[in-house]
Structures are given as C-alpha cells and as structure tokens.
Length: 168
Image (cartoon, rainbow, N blue to C red; front, side, top):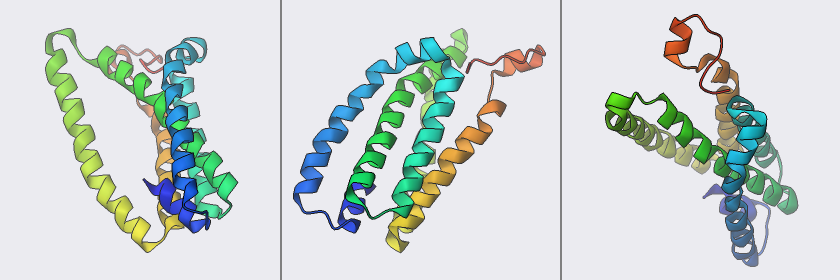
C-alpha cells in the first residue's frame, strides 16, 4: 500500500494512516455505483474515465508532498479501482464463449495473476528508488490503458466489420 508511504513522505503523523484507512475503506464502497454509472454512460466511457482519473491521481501523488492533496489523490485512485472492478468482471463474463466459459475465465484469471506477479515487484523496486518514480509509473500505466482502450474490442465484432465493441 503505497498510500502509507506517501503519508510518511508528507510528514503526516502516525494518526494519518488509521484515519485515512477508514476513508479509503469507505471510498471502496463506490464499486456499488459502478453498474448504475455504466448503464448511464456506457462501459467504454466509464472505463476511460477510470483510467484518466486514476492517472490524474497518480500524477498528483508523484508531484506532491501535501498531505490533503495526497489523501484526495489516494481516494480518487481507490474510487476508480473500485468502480472499474465490477465493470471489468462483467466485460470478462460477456466476452467468454458459452461453451468454454470456465476455461476462458480461468485463463483470464491466470493472465491477471501473472501480470500482477510481474508488475508488483517492479513497482516495489521503483518505490525503493523513490515514491515519485513509482507514482509516475502508475500514471503512465493508467494513461497507456486509456490510450489502448479504443483498440480493445470484441474480436467477433471486429471480424464482422462492425466498429462497435463489447466495451461501449
């Protein structure tokens, strides 16, 4: 949890971790609003919004030692993560072929876990080198997700020549 290191960087007292942990936990409830927001804006817009807002949060964290800005940015990243989680699970389920659903979902899980096993140590090493560096890496990863989003669509629809994707 890099937020705690950020609060230390801001020279916040020990009380900060406990108090902010409560706020971050409550912010985690934002995931419950994901379905409604997705219905109103569409999955593609919500996904893009999550990527861009998380990038903004990471950018702020990379460049500030202000405690209140840091808390706001951590909350923003947490809300984006919690809003995106149910959406990405829905996208995975929709894209899994009915006959091979269990296999497809297992492969998705395997790939996500392998990615996490690769990315987490890299981010850990970057954090050892400096918190602004790892926050900048988070910013770049979120920005890359936003840039690549238009290219990630449903293969069946692309083959059919449609411009629509499952991620609307």
